[in-house]
Image 1 (spheres, rainbow, N blue to C red):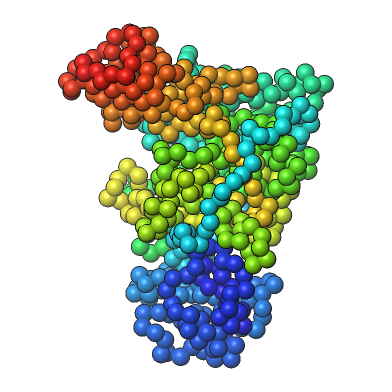
Image 2: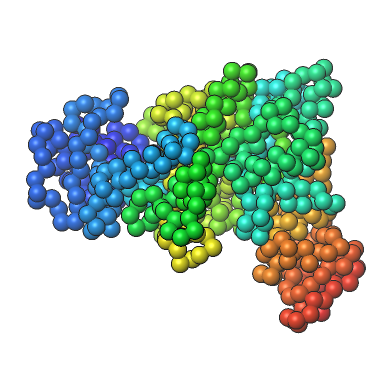
Length: 576
């Protein structure tokens, strides 16, 4: 008898025969599993005397490769809330036919539909994606970039696609357009300008190396960033899409009504056909997170096109991380290791303790190492919080700089029916983000780094210095990046000039970029010697301000903006 629990664990007569890929199921007792197995094997219907509040599993046809003697799937056991309302939105498949029809009408690819289907069924099963401390082990050691040998042979570069994630708007910083068009260096140099500069330098180096082929340059755009990005690259850099760079379009997914678990519908009287292909309102759709990368590559046909044209490796990073350049040492290491998936990680410090970390599953029965995985804060149980934040135990975090073997990715997608098995991120929103009283919806999202677990023994990680991880998530990050704490190196990357970036704390009034610009009307201060900086109140930094050590500047007058005069301020608390 082959039982399949709601978390995907296979059980033979109550004895596990495979390591679970996700946390063990909590809920129905083991005797329920054996009870179901007996009736499934006998072909008899479950009697009406099932335990109170628990719907008994339904018999399902076995999947290819599974035991055919009475497979039952515990996914049919709904959550307590669903049991109280009589099941999950119409049965084991919920409202899936409605979602599929809506996505096909909107022109979404089979790969995008398969990925959303996997997430929707996780939602129906009540999966939370939590990972208990008892189910994982810390990663104790990894190879480091600093220990890798120098590489002069750049022949692998021509087999590599460099792809930047460019689907975000930076709304948290008050931006209305692509975040990659935010000015990060003076004068008026954007993320995208620096990325183009990096790629042009690499193209030039390849030309000087006997005309060897350069890497392919691609951007993962969304419907919100595509038009502005195309226009910017064309007008400012004279770069043609399809020649100098290539676009991969992110999928869109339908929002899920939080009450009915059916496709959310914009109830406004002004509802218009502004969604993809005119299907529904634009408010009914959302981008499903950067975990959509794999479906976007496969569904667009570009994954197969890359492979057909001789590309073997994919290097992916965020467009706001200007330290992430194509490094020949990592590329050579990736190729020689035989890994299918390589993640760049950094060592955690006290300031990183609330963020996710790398871990691994326990050793296999044969004595081999368990596979790598990521555990994010939302996946941590409350009782495990101390262990989660112990940076001496869980030492590494994901930079989102990933190296992927394209042939291995194609094989993995094929073996899984066209979609990777990524943990669900259930993001609660309102259908109209501007109206907090509008209908509650779920946005089902995934993260691309979580794919490290899908590649099992062929997944690996390498420790890199902090200068390969310089993201901009807040205006405090932006202040650091604009300052002399960072400098552009020969590859075009912005690299940290100190052992650690200064810890900058800005008043809440500087959360938005427009307000932040009033703080630095004459440019960023010097921070290369600064360890900690706190700016409070209405301030304007004068030209030539230098902060060193730990400095705090406060303007208690809430009505008048005061200038911080030019000069050096070292280890001081200044009240204006």
